[in-house]
Amino acid sequence: MDAMQWLYSDIVLDHFKNPRNVFDPDEQFAYDAEGTVGNVKCGDQMMFMLRIGDDDVIRDVRWRTYGCASAIASTSMLSEVTKGLHIREAYNLKPEDIATRLGGLPDNKIHCSVLGDKALRAAIDAWLEKTGRAGLYRNEGATVICTCLNITDRDIETAVREGARNWEQLQERTKIGTVCGGCKVKGEALLHEYVHIFGEE
Amino acid sequence: MERRIVYMDYNATTPLHPLVRDAMAADLGVFANASSMHEAGRAAKARVDAARAEVAKLAGVPNPDELVFTSGGSESNNTVFATMFHLGRKGGRRKIVTTAIEHPCVINAASWLRDEGFPVVFLPVDASGRVDMEAAEREIDGDTLLVSVMSANNEIGTVEDIPALCRMAKAKGALFHTDATQSAGKVPVEAAAWGVDYLTLSAHKIYGPKGVGALYVRKGAPIEPLIRGGHQEHGHRAGTYNNIGILGFGLAARLALEDLEGRAARIRVMRNRLRDGIVERVPDVRVNGHATEVLPNTLNVSFPGAEGEAILLYLDLEGVQVSTGSACASGSLEPSHVLLATGVGPELAHGSIRFSLGSLTTNEDIDYVLEVLPPIIKRLRRMSTVSVA
View 1 (cartoon, rainbow over the protein chains, first blue to last red):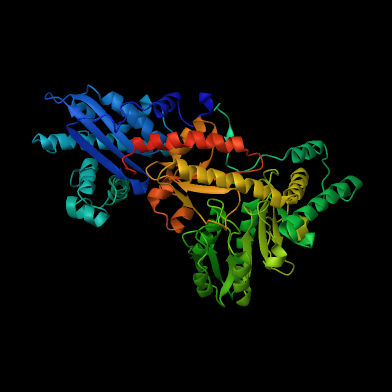
View 2: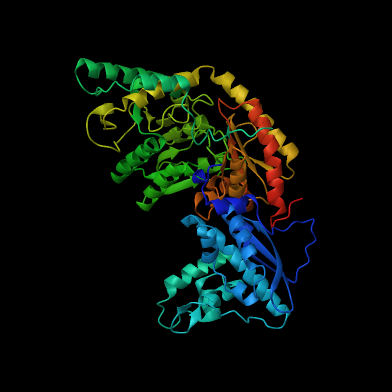
């Protein structure tokens, strides 16, 4: 097919047609940690499985997704990038890095590519918890949203993963926006995004 | 089987009928303004009116003067809702009753009236997509200005009981509109016999050109122009006549009525074969819509565990062109409002595919889809986080 006529870049098309490291139910892949984010009701769900050495280096990776072409391609690319990385480097991979490596994604598809790195982080968090280091990287690479109380996007993410579903519940857990309130618009946008990603149980 | 292009998206649009294309091409040099008084203008107007007579037959309307040419279905529908805006502002009845499964142009036009303070009700539908008649009885009352129900749904193909709904509206003195964009050329459309006040048609769904449609306005029914200007269309729709488009629409309308039943029957047999083949070859699927009260060409299927946009694009790589109710394909986070209204959960709506067949569909096309589709679903389900039996 003429790539110019394809909705996505050549690289996206290649990863969509031939996804790398995708989980094969017949393979019996043994893994040390697993992370799942997203919700089928919202149209996308992602699972990352990691085999990790004692040196915290990611030896091998598998993933599964219920998701669109962007989700499949970006997770495939992410899985290639992840192999051989120290978990700390992997934890700080950004969706934008993956989108760039894919030769770009259409604007309305960026959203579909963010689940992969969230699932990867969830898997690494699970590994850290399993090895007695829960929350070790939580605030690395975080952006401060509420400047009064120094609350970051990672704090909001954590609160949502722990059950916050609306602004009041987020405030109960983080105290975000309880001083000047200037961060509400930005905070609510992130809350909405994370609730979508981490879903309603 | 060798790769082939299989177009199965006829509810989105249809190719021009070759005879329509030839007639339009032959007329490309005819430039006269159909409103001009000179000979060339009169000749152009005569062709517009001949086309109007053909479209009137398609709509089931004895008097062609009751048809207004527009730029398409969306304009026709918006003209009706704009008319309601003007009527409702004058006082009296203001309630608008429509359904939860209308085309976005009706949903959005009705939502606009709601934002302008009109009471608007979106009637629920049952699991097959048919309007809940009890809710209709309850909601259509003495305050109702307009009832608007599509004749057939574009996504799932369910055919509504327009005569019964129209009678309900008439019994309460309300106006009645039906969007027959998807019905025309697939099942009989009988605007006059049904008793509707307004009926919407579009040319490009019946192998005619894009950019032209019609609105039937029953004689005596109120109508306010959406586009103001010259005296064209009795002042109901200004703008220089789109001669060539209208000519194409007229011929497409005539061809659509030729052997309507025979063509529908032939397409229905293929659609049923596709449906039965999918059910037989792909485990755990759900066929959406009504079993019998459905357009002969439409098949909507949900594939649990597989996401619709991914299915669509894998099919596209194989040359099969369909559409999906998945949110991902729409750029929003919400899947098909039609499937959600039928009570299909979001999980199934995200994994839905619409196959819409047409006059160029062949049995080989059906065989090809039945060959390439099952491995795609199997592959997506194997990589899915959702386990399917």
